Length: 177
Image 1 (spheres, rainbow, N blue to C red):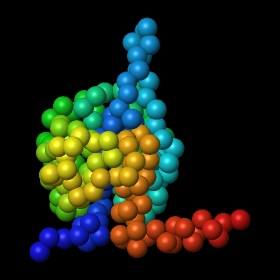
Image 2: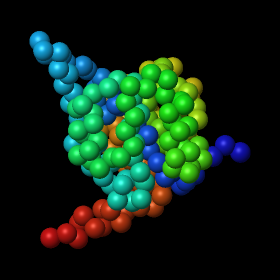
Image 3: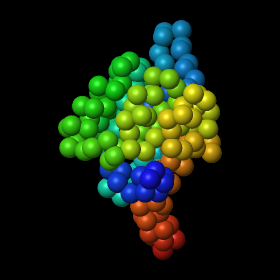
């Protein structure tokens, strides 16, 4: 019997995210000096913080290397940050070993072909609304919004709802004065 999204989400302890096309809209901007800029969505950041507060670690696994990504990860308290990994699966397997987790304990969100091996390994796999159509064969869920526009937040909320942790978050937010 195939497990539902909610059943798969119950065991998630680590969410691993690609960056370009997931945490950003995939645009790369270079200045004349060659410096890169990226734009991150604050709602995705809140989704990451909510997962962390609920006991779910969030990590980055990306093919590019950028000091901007390192800065954003540090700002969000993310300690597992792997950059410059063109072949991502060996690094994801290393993360699993280091965290003492099984594939069913990880969720992965990616947007394109290099993410397929990781999406296939993960216990819960997702892509933003504008992720490559080829990912439909390997993902459990497609976000209602594009990468860099709240896709990570939407995935975080789905996981937290499935684990019964979303309503307490809302109740606590409403109770604050």
